Length: 399
Image (cartoon, rainbow, N blue to C red; front, side):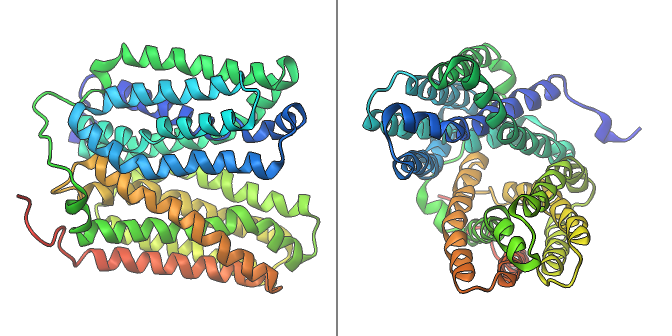
């Protein structure tokens, strides 16, 4: 029987707990935006001001991820994860009690503090408690949990708001999260760092002295910029290229996202089966870029576009686990959680850069170039991973 079938006791429980916490983190990211129209009417707040609340959430989440990685290395991922989830949920629940705009934006900053713990804590726990021969599937399950959080949040909070009002909707989802955080704290034996695990001397200097880690940061930035073109601008681009209604164009985006999510778990198996993760990344991203170029060419009937963008989405979903395992390989002088926290901050950077590029493209009336730009970002991302294979992990040894 293969060695990969031998599974340490409690490993599945660890993966389940961490993945469920990840689902909640993504759920809370989208808990307020679907209720914007209710908040606007109740408190007389503009949509621009409400959008700044989401910006506040994203800023603190992004900026604090690496410092939270340092904290995870010092006191353990389990404590940080349970504490962050409680703070995140409590801040969302507290929005239900607000009467002024400044109170909402302050609470969203606070919710972002809680949200910043998930990447460093989750990846640290999984990397130290899951066998390397199964890590790809564990990371894929973790990613799927986050995707499900995005899918579940809008219908749940809108349904609760319809039944009980927007304030009670946030109070309910936040209150449930607080209770689940307390329950998670009672499962500390399943999410704490194993006894005897070596703690590393994390520092900003060790991060920026590592060419491999810096290249991974760039990879995340470029791949996020590539994906943002499809997620945020493909509906408008398809509508103009193929002269179809926006509602019809949106079906293409839904197809892309659904097949991307469905491919995440097979991508975990792929990462465990094939150890050349950079090659898996390159092949899948080239495949995704190729089908996106075909979609944006205007040469296909729109029915064929739906099939092509679905294939592009599947290729995109396949890379997640291989990408994350590549990050683990760069964690030599720095702890795994801190490396993940640092490089995934590049994802936020890509979401800032990408929309600016795609917005300019559409303003100039060249919707086909949305897909060309996405493909170029993908190819540049592949180049960073291929270069990374030939660079040292750090420029100088750890002290």
